[in-house]
Length: 580
Image 1: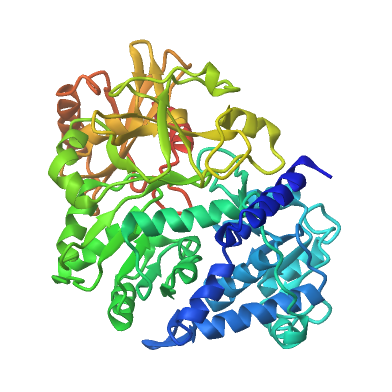
Image 2: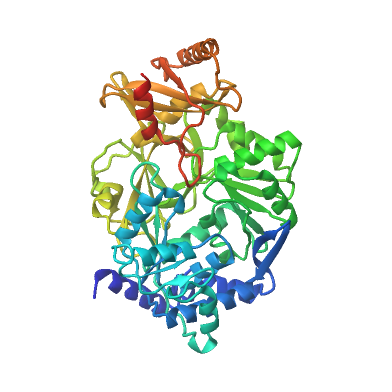
């Protein structure tokens, strides 16, 4: 028996012996069962049906569908621990399949389709899945490349969509075959039982599979619900599918937005606003690019959303101009836009509201102090340590920096993941062992090195100064991307900017690349020269940027495919080098 399996069985046995029913099973899918018992007729999921109409499914109906899928998947031979890739469009099927796979303790594999074909196949080769539950085009590719490492072990395959002869059963087949007689009782799930492998976006390196345990998902739900006071009966519109998965666990209705989730920067504001109003949405999540589109449209058309209690935005720093616009849009009493901070490996970490930012920290951000991302969530610990690229084995080897000193951000808590899937070296570089276990877990705990730099202020708030990989190391010292870029973004014609370094590390030449606001890109040599002089004058006003003399203009900075907000500075560095 492996150490991991033994720990899981001991964990469940100890909870049973203590009579702790809540701790006996930490399978988040069972929270859907509780929601279905308490609010059977409440809408669980609402999806657009075209021409301003919708179709919906209740909690009782969703629970019934999940139960039937469980029976169908078991009949197909899916057992605990089997790795099943889920590639399905956002909607009822996606959410129902997620709960069904978690309920039978399969390991759910989620890969962002926006990461590009090369990265997708590399990720699948690493996983060597036991099956695919996917749309027809994916099943056709699986059949065509069936001898490759990404597909040769795939025995449990389901097509979500039209039937393709010879490629296995469909979603409808699972539902019809999963009768009540096949619904065995769900065995209690330990908190350390593997639940999913979710891949990072690959915005600052090759995508890596993050191994999630069931207890981590439960902790995420509890932390988010407690921090924001989310109540059963609320209605959520998630602009990123993964953030809407566990609404059903909180008794919250999910309204699937009519949008391409891989292109939030191009969302149609009219469709989002109509859906919010039609369905009584009280909460909505979107990347900063998503809310930038919504906020600008609402400002132009004098639209407010008084029924929206809270908006959430993550995926990258949220610019002050987005916060300012959304504060004017959210006119309900106590309504606010919150900016939870975290990473695929550690979510959530900290949060702050636009009201506090605009009242207390925005002016400091404009002067280059970084972006304040708020105070830690309950049970989440944050430390700042000296910046280093090498591995750190234990917390005994760590020196914690005082308030106000910029360093590397590390975090610990019940939702923080412990390892990358089948990637020993990245795990060694990103994780630090702490001999102190977390409450309810007998294992030594783990700190995650987020890969960001920042500092804690004297009030315990975390400030983000940029990615560690994006520090420009000059002969005069280190330059932090977010701090320096903020100086240039004070210019009214600038939408956003990116700091890159040209040359050898330690002697890099700092270059700022700016993307003007729409319609503000200089079109003549005279305008470009005048614009550049204005930016150089602005740079000279701050000790953070007075050494930057090279300024380039870009019509549209390249960004990540997941949130359309993380600037791809690695590609910009090569772009800048060709022009200087």
